[in-house]
Image 1: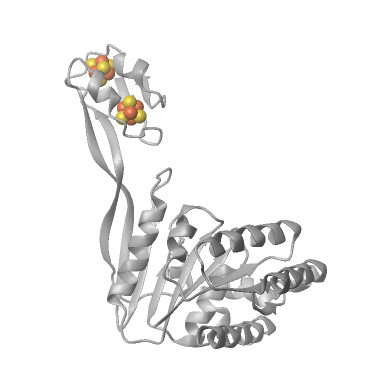
Image 2 (image 1 turned 180 degrees about the horizontal axis):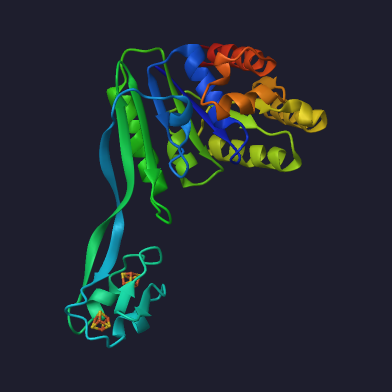
Length: 287
Ligand code: SF4
Ligand code: SF4
């Protein structure tokens, strides 16, 4: 089974639109949404079965027992992260600021503070003739790379016999992207033809290359700036990165997405361009 990861330098470039179209074109039964901060592949890849749901555990968080607390404030003065607040009802831990270091529990004279394992996210695994693995990280939580690895591994473990697995990655170059790149046969970067898009692409390619990932690039809404599209193509040429195609700006794309459809389901120029890009990508994967 070949593993294809689809990435972009930032959100809103058409990464998920591309992934959704590729899923339709390939009819693959092995899919993962690793964009754990804002997963949305499920909107265009609707499921008819209930998922198996499990918690994702992050680090520890401190919790103050109000029955034992005498409001001395010692914990607050020792917390380096300003995570302990004094409210009308007494001292309480701000779960978004707490780093789980345990100092408050150590200094509390009343033993009123305990560290609890934090549920930092929710994993969902849909199994119905194939596998669709996805997850959502709770707001303000770290460990996104570990959650991405969990999502990816759950998909790989449950994947049926299928020639292709498609993984929708996170935007940017952070921890979740790095976690998603390992073990991929090809990383397709969806680039935006703007000055920042060119810069994002360069950073993302550099990150992916550090992990020795095989890369390919396409441009979405290329006709918004033919000049920047050419700059992206030139960059790919200079770096020996295959340029697999360009998608025109197409009003049908937003209409399709708003209707919960994949662009592959709509007869429009963007669909035709995506089909060409899909075929070029598959060719590269099979080389
Ligand atoms: S150190 Fe312990 S007793 Fe004092 S305010 Fe904090 S939790 Fe309450
Ligand atoms: S565990 Fe550390 S960061 Fe969290 S409230 Fe206690 S001292 Fe602050």
